[in-house]
Amino acid sequence: AAAGGGLGDRQRGTAEGLAAAEGWAAGGAGQPGELDAAGGPRVALSGGGSIPLLGLGTWGLGDDATAGAAVEAALAAGVRHFDCASIYRNEAAVGAALHAALASGRVARRELYVTS
Image (cartoon, rainbow, N blue to C red; front, side):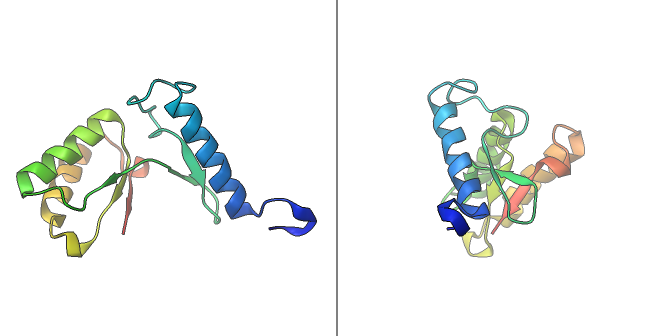
């Protein structure tokens, strides 16, 4: 905790993000299942900026067709945060779906967060 018993920057960002997610889930900032243009509730990053709190984990999405369809559906729903890793073995399908969305102009690169 920060001096004076307050929350540190990271804890405060997490607490604010969780509060935003709880409000969103309760229908406070749109209805559950609907994300705003910024990808829903966000959490502050220690270096500045923020990242969507909600994202699609790409582990276990099945074959390439299923993985690609899941990413496309997530993008259509407003998801802008994707968790990926080479061990998931679906990089080609996830990348192709993201590339198609970028190439078509449906999504701007500055909107996407791809984490590993």
